[in-house]
Amino acid sequence: MEIELSASMMCANYANLEKEVSELENAGIDAFHIDIMDGSFVDNFGMGYQDMAYIKQKTSKIVDAHLMVRKPYNYLDILFKLGIDVIYIHPEVDPDPATTIDKIHNAGAIAGIAINPGTSISSISELLNTADRVLVLGVNPGHAGRQYQDYVDNKIETLLNLKSKYKFEIFLDGAVTPDRVEKWSKKGVKGYILGTATLFKKFTNYKEIINSLKSNNKVLV
Image 1 (spheres, helix red, strand yellow):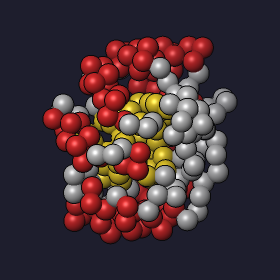
Image 2: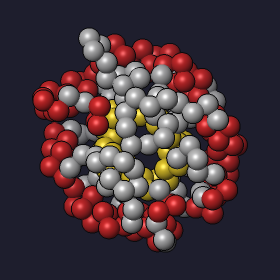
Image 3: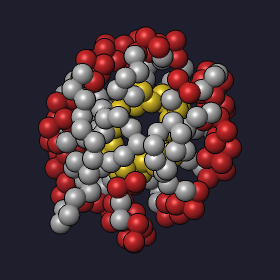
């Protein structure tokens, strides 16, 4: 099974977003990852409605939205209108996450749970049988370029032991380096959100990076 690579668009060059989307799609990226932040749940603001609409309009690839916001259900109708394919929520800031996940499914989208480095698996265990994906954050969220938290590895191992029971896929976001893709793809982690640690660097070739990651790493099932 092939791994799934997503481009973290908060790291892209906004001076020429059209070129970025085109080059990434032509290079073989599987999805575009959009971070939506409210300045409250995390200390930053993410991409706007116009950016999301533009990316969705310009690509045939999957577009997913990571809601780093309080009351994520307030954002769902906007995302449904745009046709966003995958929506990740943080259950700890949603008073009724099960209902939110149901609403995402009823709209025909894929529902994901996002968990911060400090969020315990036990706190979201009841939702694992309803989610299609679990997005594990390897860094404290809100800004690109933050340091990977090594203790997250134990959380990934625990989720790998649970995923066959609950039928969800695991995605990793934050400081995703080629060596981490190699390590976790061999163990069964399906997807990777690529930012400044791998994809968005000066003088890099998107196609070479993506081809290298895909040719060297496959998910073992």
